[in-house]
Image (tube, rainbow, N blue to C red):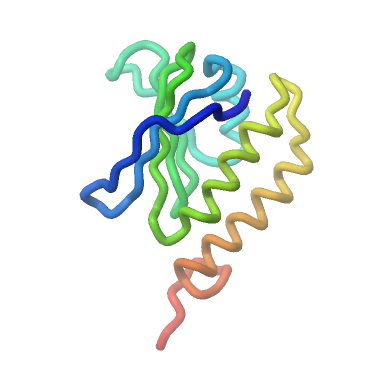
Length: 130
């Protein structure tokens, strides 16, 4: 599954940057299950059957419906550059249900460290006193 193009962008009231993207294949249940390896996934049935939200703390979230090719990605502005690359990697390395989880976990660890340093100044998640 790959991101084909970005079709809409906007800055949200909370300062996040939202991007709606089109994928080359519909989101599947196994892909949503795969995302659980790298963040929090919630199935939000109140929004309709198959609606999900994935979140990487302090980084970004993905919202969409299983079976759809459009998703919404919201990036925390301070780490958008780091997270854009990571989102592409998640989709790229999924390999239609045969992901290389070891490689992705190494990339995930490095990405989380970069996010923590950018936001908090260190990798323990606590703000640096200054």
